[in-house]
Image 1 (cartoon, one colour):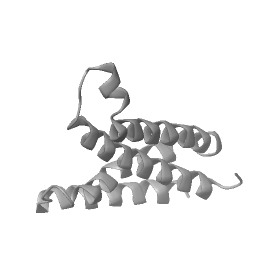
Image 2 (cartoon, rainbow, N blue to C red; image 1 turned 120 degrees about the vertical axis):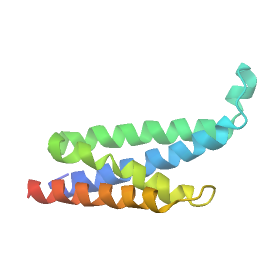
Image 3 (cartoon, helix red, strand yellow; image 1 turned 60 degrees about the vertical axis):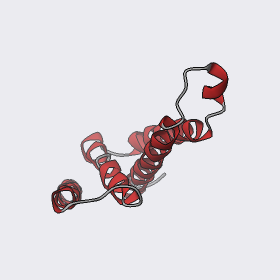
Length: 115
């Protein structure tokens, strides 16, 4: 990895993976059972944990090459991705969309301040 922009791209990928992981965890929680066999056969839950793990590995790689004060706030993009993914099952009202826009503006300002 050569540039800070690549580190930012990796963190964005991390946020998308963790948001997708959260969606799978939500799906898997509907079939949640505390029996070991049923827990191990809960595919959405396993996929959710795997996406979280992959996101964590990618985040560590990104942090090695970028500034923590710039990269860490980008993790808030997870809220944005979850909001977009939630449209399939949940109603997004005006206040929620205002929050999403505020997050995007805040991340943009932090990124601009790092330049």
